[in-house]
Image 1 (cartoon, rainbow, N blue to C red):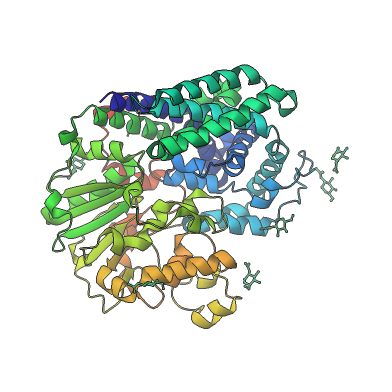
Image 2: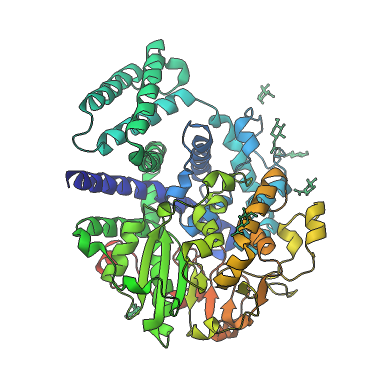
Length: 597
Ligand SMILES: *[C@@H]1O[C@H](CO)[C@@H](O)[C@H](O)[C@H]1NC(C)=O
Ligand SMILES: *[C@@H]1O[C@H](CO)[C@@H](O)[C@H](O)[C@H]1NC(C)=O
Ligand SMILES: *[C@@H]1O[C@H](CO)[C@@H](O)[C@H](O)[C@H]1NC(C)=O
Ligand SMILES: *[C@@H]1O[C@H](CO)[C@@H](O)[C@H](O)[C@H]1NC(C)=O
Ligand SMILES: *[C@@H]1O[C@H](CO)[C@@H](O)[C@H](O)[C@H]1NC(C)=O
Ligand SMILES: *[C@@H]1O[C@H](CO)[C@@H](O)[C@H](O)[C@H]1NC(C)=O
């Protein structure tokens, strides 16, 4: 009990800090994206120094991610949120640069040649934002801005690693201290306390590696040993500690660099939803832990595995987005009592997600919330990280979870997978009745030339590779994720998860495809995809794609693919009402968190 309470308290504090951390990143991202994508850019363009400053912080984060020993959790993963990541992906840093020597480039002008534009754009080309991105690249100015930013961040990266490591150790040690179960090995607790004191005293306020004393280095080594011991003593804690540590560390970094920018932040803070999203998550989490454990259970669990019902899956860590998906699906359904929603999120967001649906039950529908961390059978994340990308969105397990649907739902035969950035506008029971004719994946096609959604296989898959060239037809039709019907029986029969692993493995040895789920999805479901009527799924609401209003009116599901998500300030105003209709703005927490219509 005491442990739980303490845990809750710490969690809340860290969440608070997380709000501070993410706000600037998101503020910045929206800032930039507006800059790239819309007319409203003028008022934002003004202060380039702030822009650069932020970028530096982001670059630092990326470096920590790589350099700090043991820190395997991608930091941005901790507060991942579709849009944030898509935004961040625009700054994906070339892996090689961060490890090599700082490059000597002028920051003054646009004559920067260290980055190969093409390579960079390929590397960070997010599947859903292809069009936006291409548009952005056509405009010369933003591209250049982006370049000088990337370059500017190099020189700071390699500096003062030791100091950073010491700070990191202190955070880890303190986190362990807080998480050590009550009544656990008291000698060890004493040891950790002593190490913290020693290290703090020895390192003092030093901010450069060159100022560190020998004593400090010794203390650092001792701490390192103690920390390894800690992970052995409390193996259960270490995953959580890792995540929290990443959060705290970032928080300190950011708070430090942002003191000067308080007024700028204040100006923008009121206008951003993402801050509100984190606030909401925090509120819900607090509420959740105040419940008795029997009150924490969602009702109708006997329906979860019933194959005769209509099953929908959403993999997301965004409570508000999920609430809109669920509300829109249920409120347009002719038989809501048959609907079972399966939301899979991460362990940090599971309490909030559960709390939301406990206090806002989805009518007669059933809902299940799971945490991806409970799926012990899921292969190691390292496989994914072999995909050459620092963008956590590409390597995020939550995204790749879609390739394990038959394993997550062993007793189900069919499931509809929805992205969290969709709104359902019509009853979907007809979708579940579609005759799949032995195919595994039902999806809308994206191979109509001239359409904004147009994609060709070789846009994301490397057809110079002989294996690809012989196995796939470059002219075969492409299709979209976002709303897919999967026949899980056929999937199991054909062992497509095994095939997915094979391609993932091949792709880790040579450049077969771009990172992300779409190209590998195209390969995995090649010849196993059945085209469904385009009106089931209208794409393109997340970027200025020119999607027509009558297309939206007709569609059963609309999809805000692209970076301009409806919950962001930069979301396209003309498309927002479809989403807003399904958000409970009157909910007290939503109001308290300043999320407004
Ligand atoms: C990174 O740089 C090293 C040497 O500087 C080079 O050998 C290697 O191929 C580069 N890797 C990538 C992915 O560019
Ligand atoms: C970097 O630039 C500075 C100033 O332009 C110059 O003095 C220095 O020699 C350069 N260093 C390298 C390695 O090119
Ligand atoms: C950029 O490079 C061109 C030629 O390479 C040069 O004429 C121009 O002055 C440079 N601009 C800046 C800002 O350095
Ligand atoms: C495509 O694959 C070929 C052969 O594996 C490789 O040489 C080439 O570099 C790849 N191209 C890209 C753009 O990755
Ligand atoms: C699926 O394929 C993988 C790799 O190809 C293989 O290891 C696995 O045993 C297969 N599973 C089934 C059920 O056939
Ligand atoms: C959906 O949201 C609307 C508006 O907030 C609300 O009135 C309605 O009860 C919700 N329906 C379900 C099934 O959640």
